[in-house]
Amino acid sequence: MTITSQPDTAQDAGFTPITDAERREFHERGYLHLPGVVSEERVAELQAEADRLYAEHQSVGHLDKTGSLHLLGAVSHSLAFARMLDYGPTFRYIWGLAGWNIYSQHNHLDVNPPYEEDETPRWEWHQDGWRQNSDAEYYAPFYGDIPRPMLSLKVAIVLSDISEPGRGQTLCIPGSHLNNSMYRPTDPEEIAKGPEGAVPWLAKPGDAFIFDRRLWHSRSRNRSQFTRRMLFMSYTYRWIRPVDDMPIDRESAWFAALTPVQRQLVGEAFGKLKVQNMWGVGDGGWVDDTIPLRAELKERGLLAGRFPCLRCRDTRGPGSADRASRPPLRCGQSRRFCSPDTHFPATKAGLLMGSAGPSWPTIPEVAHSCSGTRSITWLLSSGISAGALRRWIALLLL
Image (cartoon, rainbow, N blue to C red; front, side, top):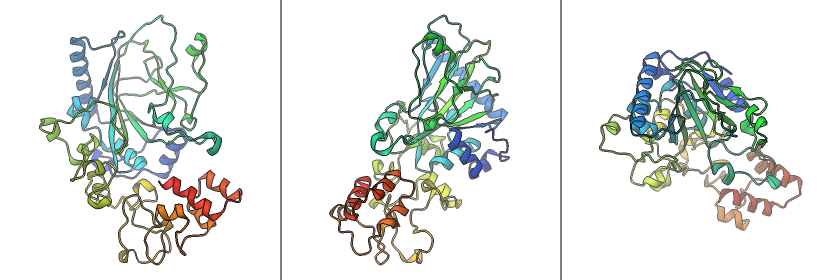
């Protein structure tokens, strides 16, 4: 899908919720193409910064044998790059799909000049995320072939004319983010041909792509007369460790020029409990409403959505009693399994011991609360006892 309607200004665009059609297309295809979302002035600034950094690394011999630059932690090398982290026309898709407790754990500038090679073709198709693709994979014999969790997504800013094939474009297979594996050939001719269904990202300077890290993709060879320049910014949850070695110099002019949201996006923690804050909480374990992006979204009334990552956690859903009379929820707690009399969640220990109390919901109610989980449906159909089911759910909550 190519998104053609964009808000007039970057400031307004940054907090315009994405549409249901855009969300559906992203989840179905694994990516969106946003033509012309970066202004000409911003593109010119980014191009100049890309050329400066390329020249600096070329002068000290920090290019690979093809003359290419792959600069990790790119936003720490350029304030112009750092300011793209929350650039409205692209950032609205990031928080709209991933929520507010996010930062950029990985970002890079790629500059790829033309290169003619006679080497044996290499298979470079992959999903981003390294160990996330193995450590977070579900146990298929029990759960079935469930796609891995997304965990992160990327923005790709196009800084060169790659509107014609052969200019080193990224290739992808639409919809492949739902597949945990793909066939990998060993025959050189088959490798050179590439997988079926692959499409190139043809784009002009100022275009952008938003893509799920699980999307199977590969860079192609640049056999043109054009140099490919791309800025990639990956976003993940703040409780996931960074990929790039990007220490923050809090005394630098670069850091002083960042807004609070931008400081969050480069990895800054807030409050007294820095580690807990990365999990979205502050003192006492409560959700921290002062985290910059959450505060911004809340002030604009954008946390009342129907999506978990954008939901105000102090809610019981339709038909609930007056919310003002109840205590706030601790981070990560849900009123889904709460006693209607006390409003306090059943404890994990109580679940394990099978003693959640008389207000514990019936098995059909538990199944309804966990709708969409195949294993719950399977367990119910197998005739599992209520006590065993409670213990099984407790393992998921631990």
